Image 1 (spheres, rainbow, N blue to C red):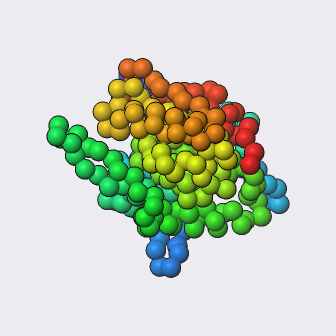
Image 2 (cartoon, rainbow, N blue to C red):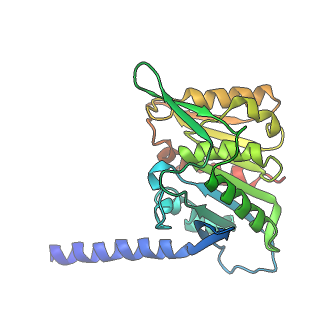
Image 3 (spheres, helix red, strand yellow):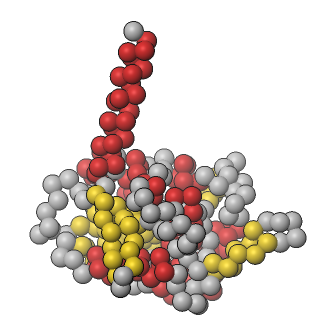
Length: 259
């Protein structure tokens, strides 16, 4: 009897997981012979004659690849929940960065203690995944169903860094953004500080991407005339996204902003 119970539980779990995965359609964006895998979820009862907000979510380094599945590991359940889909119908796009590539243009060095030091170089040509992402965004922007005043972007870790960089490279597109345990070049924020609403998240004990990177971006955005929000989770390491995906206010806050 116990084996039967756990067997049914196992089947139920993977049935739910599979159904959530299937909400996100498999797609590939191809431009000049280069391909960017992505998954897209449309609102229930999608009607192409209507206008919908569009959300892009950028995964971290651990989800890179070409399987077009790993990028859904973090955030899938949060964004595809019944509550979100019912109250905030939107088109949601999860692109996947290739293995060994990055969203942001980053130069990594190491200090005397062997800790990684991030150097952000958005002044250089964007990475190939960033180029493809920007072109994908441009393509979606021209569709009839996309509400051009309600484009949003967020990401975690490597994706948080990509979020900061793409705001600099495309400051007139997004109404709001939420970088999670990321970082960027504070000198670039003048291009978007007054144009994009930001909510920045980080774990206080992050030993992969130092929390001071988010503090620096927050301070720079405020100094440049923006009004960012900053949430630092005490006693939380690099996995700040686990806390973010329990923030009941995030989705209402995000979709409340219009360009």
